[in-house]
Length: 152
Image: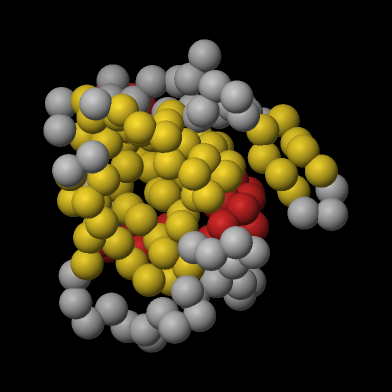
C-alpha cells in the first residue's frame, strides 16, 4: 500500500525520517532547512510519497518535486533527495507543551509513528529536533544497514 501525503516536509537524519507537519506558514520548510544544515538529507518539501515496507513506513520524494525545496524569499532550490523509514512526526504548533507528559503517535499506513507537538520558529529548533529523534524516535534501520535506499 502506498499513498502521497501533502503539506508536510520530511528529512532523513542518520537514516531515520522525520516528518514535519503543521499549518501553512508554521515553519515546516524552515525546520527542514535547519536540519539539512545540521547534516540531514531532504526527503520531500510540501509532500512525500509513503509506502509500507516490511512493517516500516518508507518516505520517498514525490516524483514531481524530487530534490526541490522552496526557500522563502529565495525561490526553488535543488538539493539531493533520499528515502528513509519514518521514525518521528514533529507537529508544529504554538501550543506545544514545554515537556511531553504523554506518549503520542500518528497512525500512518496503519503503523504508529511517535509524534511530538513541537514549537516552531526559534533558533535552536534543529538541535531540539535531533534530541527529539534520539529520545522519542523509532529505532529503524539506517542507510548503512541496507534499510532505506537513495532516491533515483
